[in-house]
Image (cartoon, rainbow, N blue to C red):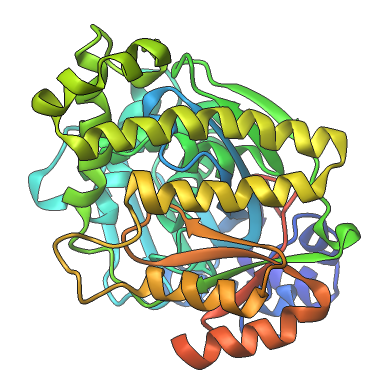
Length: 426
């Protein structure tokens, strides 16, 4: 580690440019990634002094296929993206984490001598820090105090997993400060544990795994304790396409019950067959049992189970299409995934707020703008937030202008797939 002031000199001398470029650190609103890092280091010095520190970048993620399959031990296809969370981290002698973030006036302050869930911290970032520390402690990994200043280019509520990126960043900080290498999947498990047990959100493992592994990955959660991760290749630029997301402006704050209902209903179906998740259910027996299931679990649960079986197969087909170089088939499958989420999974809008259907509106506008080209689908957990689209390069400018017209300047953004997961810059 180097003094923060020495890092400023290195940044000024362009000594870290290659490392920043290799990690695909986002520029954000700054002219260069180096200028962004320099601004954050100065904020760190102002808050915590000129101390030995390290710089960590963790990507957000985009789901390419496998909408709401991970929590049923299913398959997903995902990729890390060039929108990232950046952290300047320094060890401290006392057993606590002090963390400040650009755009937030309040500093997180977590006492590491108490690693039990705290009720008042639920749904707040200190719960994630405390939960990840607990996971590290339970797995005999060092838990050392640190202070940090962070700045995120992963928009909250975007479906790019700002919370998972924060979790993986926290785990990467504990690992860096503790001087240990932690397997990416273990970093993901630490984040999921913190989110489930301490934060209070029943999430799967997709988001954290994609942020932690980097690149394009096909993940099979048939054994959630040891997910199978297979690398895949997707060079959209060479294929003549751009990957765009559009933020519709919806709020996720009151959607926890909607999210929780998806795995709960799928599991209710699985239990009718003596299983905890749908991955263990024979699909033919499921379809034969639908008349009896209607009275026991309800029609929506049945439709969501149908989505799982179809979507789980679709991920395999998406991976095969990439391997075969059949991008037309890949795009067709993406559109089919979107239709399944809309018609079967039903996570396009909340049934508790039918006036707010930003995702539905965005999908309709996107499909009209693409006019039969490319593909569009809901992005992430759904109910509000973001859509994803594959846009031919010669249509990107018009597509972005159209989406921004309806959802505000800057709502539509072009993503690049980032090759690396957590990256220590210096």
